[in-house]
Length: 137
Image (cartoon, rainbow, N blue to C red; front, side):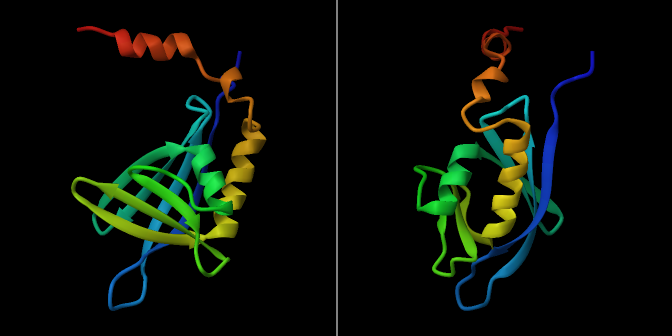
């Protein structure tokens, strides 16, 4: 039997908001793996290094419509309705990025083609996730 899981990816140019200068381009890849149906990841490429952030697919979708999120990731529409703002915070620092809302929406549409909203639990393997938590060396 073929593996029913799939990975959806999209390359999107984010822009890092900076003080005293225009936004700086930050190439990024969005990824949705049906093995983790509740989450999306974004890999941001800054120079020679890359940083991966993982957050809820619902958070990304809700952020297209209104400001949402608590803690390390906050997402919401920009003053320019063509953009969405993604705020990332960690102990090492913070970044405010913007991306084209249509690109984010198109990526989300592809993820919903794989797993429709509300049916994530049909794809989530609770036993496997519990086994990961209880694994002992």
